[in-house]
Amino acid sequence: MAHPALPTPDLEASLAALHEAGFAWARSCCRGDPDLASDVLQTTYVKVLSGHAKFSERSSFRTWLFGVIRLTAMELQRRGGRELPFEAEPEVESPSVGADVELIRAEEHEALREALGKLADRQREVLHLVFQQELSIAEASGVMGVSLGSARVHYERAKKRLRALLVARGHGRQARDEREDRSEEP
Image (cartoon, rainbow, N blue to C red; front, top):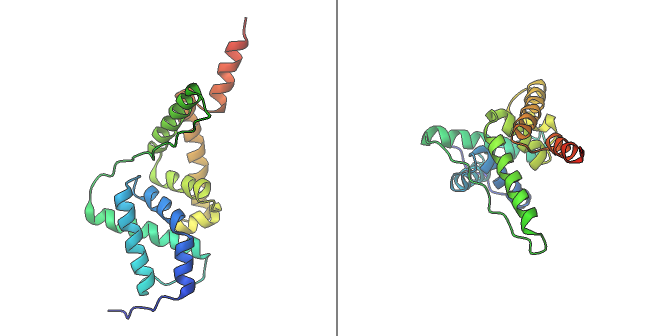
């Protein structure tokens, strides 16, 4: 058994600074299950603080940590072997927004959630890392453990498929433009 590494204040501070983003990434890796994401994050922290996962400085700390979270999620899911439901986060109500605007937002949120659920896992992962975690495609490729070229292909295919799925449901810029064009016709 490896001797536990003493956690340094810098390591603990880095983990604390990335906790919220790490939890969001863990939820993404766990198809939205917050309980499993909490388990994944806790197991990740144990690995990091005990020295079982060591930062080798070949990438940014954030990229490395997200890779550890992803691998930990895969390990726990493999062991658990259960289907994970995706649960949307509750919407925060804004008192200054009208009911019609809230209804449109809710419909768009549902359409996006459904479309994301139809993407392949790697496509969904790369979109989450690039758009939600603000990683570059190169950093996302490191987290995902795939080549940069593969990450770029997953990214482009995901955007194209997501766009098509949203337009098919009547959402997205193209669908809005088409609705506006029809409303302007005499």
